[in-house]
Amino acid sequence: MIRDEIGLTSPKDWCGGLGACGSCTVIMNGRPVLSCLTLACECDGADIETAEGIAKSGHPIIQAYIDNNAFQCGYCTPGFVCTSKALLDRNSDPTEADARDALGGNLCRCATYQQHPPAVLQAARELKKT
Ligand code: FES
Ligand code: FES
Image: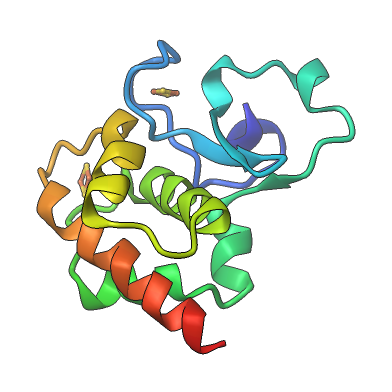
């Protein structure tokens, strides 16, 4: 897995690689994918983003997650961040419903669901300023 072999620890294995939790989500060629269900051979030549890279780029979704307290333990957060960033890449003006729909495959044991859509909408507003 990406975290074991490459040392990028943001993608998490929560559901045991069953494709059920979204904690392992990364962005591949602009689309959120479950890394636990993606074979290495499928990634040859692909453009892959993780939460580490999103944070390093200064993307406003990171500060929006902080400002909206959109995490508790943080275990699921990188997956939510990747899914949120992929939504913003393809939709610069998402509605709250768009955010809820996009994030529907990401689970959070700490039940921070209410805070994610406001974080996405804040990041969208910030991106419009740039
Ligand atoms: S580890 Fe749960 S969907 Fe990949
Ligand atoms: S913040 Fe703890 S699992 Fe989501």
